Length: 304
View 1 (tube, rainbow, N blue to C red):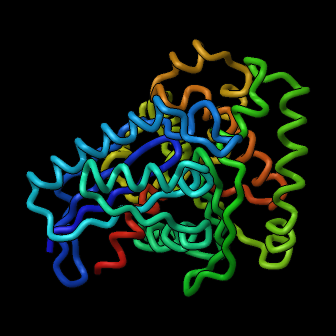
View 2 (tube, one colour):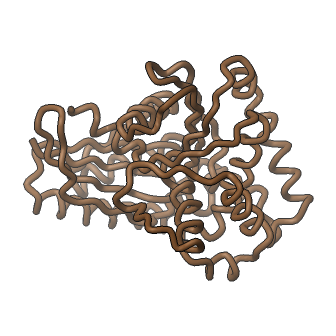
């Protein structure tokens, strides 16, 4: 059976096409497009017209590719930007009419569940872990061990939301930094209560920003690692901290010039760095693993 999985994220739309046979799969095609659906007014819960049209155009292209690959089944999921937008239903309807793609708008809990299933498929969960997925609209946290998911929650503190609210200086100054940290400290109180109880040993970063952290380190150190084909990557903690400090001290053009940086993340990565640093400190974790498998692989796992 040939499956197409579409993940409509707040910043990026993903398309993955795979051949599924019983418990195995082969990825035939994979792409992502920086649609930036949450641009401009995500904190007002609106998809602005230019972003709306970019999203439609992207999905028209995806529909053509799906047709070319003679796909048997399509699973399309939309997350925070569509979920919270007043005109999210209009977008879903427009996609169905224009592209023939039926989108399921999933809850934050369902999103966290799919992320967990994707990360589990990567083999990254070796002991008590906290999984973290930093999206543009929301951030999902999952506490788990090698056998089961223990706790999960989605928070509306995604990088695009935070950037539109707090990123007013560049490099970000202490005032903006402290305002952001105060906000996420209040938001994440329940998470740290759970961490205090379950004491996760490892932070598993699900794709996205964590792939960029890895790429920056790999390019700087000339490590023979290809993130595009790897399922997981174990960070050296000191190398992560060194990279995080650099990201917070550089301005837009300096970050853009860093080897391994992609245009979409030049500014978002500052927000992702601040959240990650805060979580590592509060949860007392000093081991980080990247799982390149995320929500879309979790969707695919449902067919295995």
